Image (cartoon, rainbow, N blue to C red; front, side, top):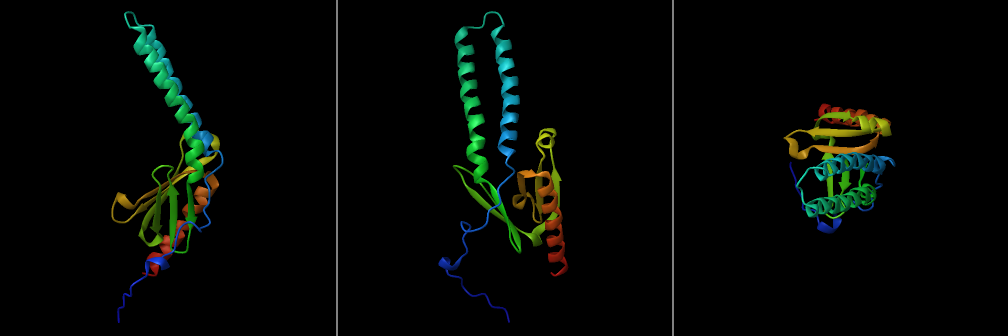
Length: 172
């Protein structure tokens, strides 16, 4: 016979006491290098506009000031955001947290996972990093993407999660 008893709110498990795994230590540096590349392209474009005839000085100065503010934020932000990201593997799911101002915690049950892949960009390969992406049943709303993992960890997680997802399908 089917039973569905109530669960008291104070009995729900929390996420604060989980053993969060951090991302690769070079991930913040990789984000900063990417920001420097983009900022370099932008400053070259601003400098090119500076050489055009009949352009007033004030808009150019404003562009450089905005570029400076953007540069400071882009280079400081990874130091704040990367330490606040992490993941936990549990028996039946994987939990991922992120966010400095807007924080989110996402749990993806292994029995909903249909496909797992790792990928990396040329910059990721330079730093030995990879991205793990989980694709779930029921659309893209439940998908999970974890950037900044070490390449070997991402591959081990991929194999582990596929094994768990396969085992949960066989036991269903």
